[in-house]
Length: 219
Image 1 (spheres, one colour):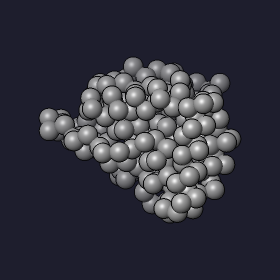
Image 2 (cartoon, one colour):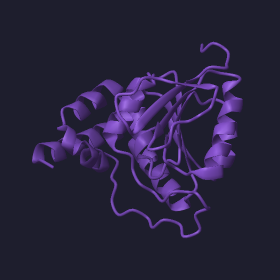
Image 3 (cartoon, helix red, strand yellow):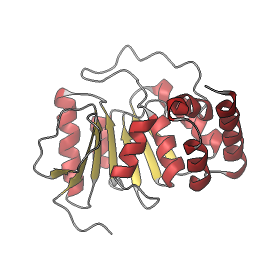
Image 4 (tube, helix red, strand yellow):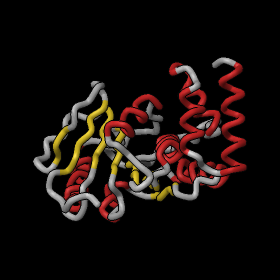
């Protein structure tokens, strides 16, 4: 990464700790960074150092921590038309990079669900340090927690798990979709064959965005 991008990350981090989130300023800073450097730049802003080891007791069908590329998150936010009026829920939030990016770019309220305590504690510390008051992280099994995310309007899944655990999450989302319109963003997952989900046109092979079709009108 070039020296200018490293300096930009430092100045962006300082501005966040001093002034709090300002989506327009953050977007301008991010877009000024060459696309090839944006993941490394975001790691510097989010102060990603040495990662905690994955919990050896991860439940079956859970995937070890792997950060989603920034470019994919940007595509998801755009295709799902996320705004500050949304509540963005990351199912399997890891260290919180996607939550940070979603909140800093859109101003949306954000909730990260993560089963690994070390990752949750690290994500909370970074959010507190940068003053992300509308971003929070909940420790626990997302397959159990997601049904309680009744304020969520956009749900993001970056291949967090598979098999029966994924089916349980989709069942819970279907219940939530009976009360409000949802958008579901999936990365590196097979197509979701659910009658209550309508796929939107996607520009990339790894990202699929869906809208719920059985709900009250979105307010």
